[in-house]
Length: 214
Image (cartoon, rainbow, N blue to C red; front, side, top):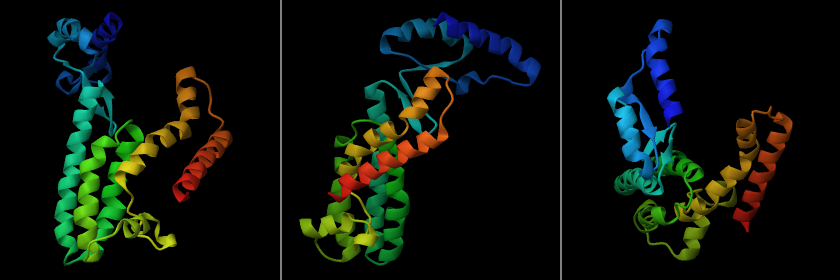
């Protein structure tokens, strides 16, 4: 932690000379709960925010508790949007369908790829999707078999609207495996074999597609 403080001090001193002016109120230091008091003592004089978790680049870094709170906030917002689109679907089904299949589900699928063990968190969203949105979209209650057909891609006569709980189960694992070569490269500082990387990504995604079909 003292090493980080050294670089913070150096940044505040040397940054302005090169046109870089640090904004401490927009800077966050993520630490484990056991280091919270020490971090506040060292960094608070510089105006830096000390937190246990923080959103970064569309993802999240920090404790499991803080991460789940962040994910729940995102999922609740999608759930509210899905309820609104359930009403829209009664009069404008095509517009509502496109909004969910092309926008909303891709947003929550991104979270599933970067946030582990999120299946349970998506249960309320799944309930809204299957009990409110899809019946409103089709104009009638759906059996389990009909719902399974709807989940299939359009090339297989479905609508391509996936079960968020099921997709959450595999999304993070698939993403982790597909990016393993990039992770290793970043950690070791070695070059990436682009051809091998592309081949590996293709293999992982094909395996996932095969599991989905079976």
